[in-house]
Every structure is written in structure tokens, then in C-alpha cells.
Length: 353
Image (cartoon, rainbow, N blue to C red):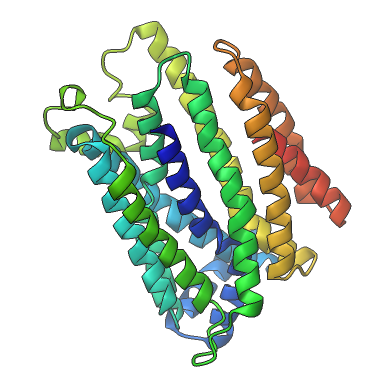
């Protein structure tokens, strides 16, 4: 079952990462095309830039960050609810509903000849992107303390493979796949992502067997709990963590808050890296794809070669090493003024991640 979930994640993440090297070019296209929605976003970003006294040349980076934040915010709202529903009704129905939403977001991207439709596509994608957290829940269902590290490492390897194949595919389509009837160069990358989502739905329908038995499911979904799932105060207090010893709960709180801080910093790099390299080094989609391929290859090597071999009880040490490596990587990438420095920082980033 772990390999079924792994395969599904790989398919999904290839489709998800196809757009990454295309984002700067997409926003340039919509900016030149005009329209009320893109004009509103650009004016909002400009006001923020002036308020924070940020150089105007970074406005495109901030615009990309706003779109990334929208996607992640909607994912934040939807994922806990999807997890709670899966605890009540099972993992498989929740996964299939998530796949339908992801396919719908790609279908909207296919026809997004204006910025408003593109934002709608990203919003639907964010709301539907609960499959990664559900995959983690599935891995927890089917493993014990001795095998969990290896299973979770498969999730990391799936991310790495997605970052290897997806961005390169998107970059290739942007060069060779211009739709002759509309001139929309993003048409074929979007179509390919849509096909992958449909295939993933079929794959899970056929090969995924429910991992959460009826005996272990929650008896009902209480509406009072749904607010706690999206209320930041409740989440940081871990109010829904019932049945855990006080000592273990305190450890869980520390781990959860550290992980939040890590993701806060990580997502900042993830969503702005392509804009930074487009602005600073004038990278095109093909060069962005090569850069993300470099990251993906290293992540696959480290996840498959190191994380899967971690023995129970050694997870904390490896996490500390990862954090110790990833901090200077952010600094190096942010200050890099040459491709050599950039790739050195990205190498450290891939190791720490």
C-alpha cells in the first residue's frame, strides 16, 4: 500500500510542479495583456512595496508571493477539514474528492486566457490540495514505530521525483508546445497536468485499498471541531490532540511550532525562487527547469540515501543537522550574485530539506 501511495504522490507532484518554472513568464504575459484583476493585484503590491520601502524591481517577486500565499492559505483551510472527514469516512473517499478538485483546477488553467481565470484555477487547486497530508495519514495508518521513518521517507522521495520531472516537463512544453490555434503557450503544460490528475484518480480508484478500518474511524464529525481545525490559536495550543500524555503533548507542541517556523521560511523560498532567478539572472523557463531539476536530483539522493536509513530514535539528530544546513542555504541563495553561488546555496538547501 505504501508504494501505491508513493506512485500516486509522484504522479500528482509532477503535475503540480510543471507550473513552477512557468510562473514568472505567466505573470509577465497577464501583466502585458492587462485586465482589471491583474491591475488590482499590481496596484496592491505597489502599495505594499511603497509602505515597506522595498525596491520596485522586486514587485514581480512580491506578486508571485501573493499568489503562493493565496494557494497555501486555502490549502491551510481545506487540509485539516479533509483530514477530519477522512478520519470519519475513510481515506479513499477524501483522496478521490481531492483528485477531482485538482483536475478541475488544471481544467481551469487550460482555458485561463485572462488573469481572473488563472487566479480561480490556483484557488481551486489550493482548496483541493489535501492529498499530500492525506498521504501522510495513510503512511501512519499502515506503519508502526519501526517502519514509519522509511514510509515517510518515501513521501520525501516522491517530492524529489516530482521536482526532477515536473519542472523540466513544464519548461520543455513552454518551448515546444505552443498551441497554434490560440497562441497560448501554457496550453499543453496545463493539458498534461490535467491528464495526470485524471490518471491519478483512476489509479487510486483501482489500486488503493482503504487504510483506515471502520473500527478505527471517528464516530462522527462534530461541527464544533471544524473551527478548531482552522483557528490558529487552537492549532498552536493543540486543542484537538486528545488522548496524549501531558509530557508527550508538550514535546508535540514544540515539534509542531518548530515545523511551522521551518515551513514559513521554506515556502518563502519555494514560491519566490523562480522569480528571484528570473529577475536577478534573467533565467528563462528552460533554465528554471534545469535549476529545479538540480534540486530534485539532490533531494532524491539525500532522501533515498540518508533519511530511509535513519534508525528509530535518531530522527531528532537528523532534523537538527537539516536545520543547521538549511539556514545558511537561505542566506547564500538570497545574497548570491553568480550562478555558482546560487547553485552552492541550492545544494545546501537540498541537503537540509
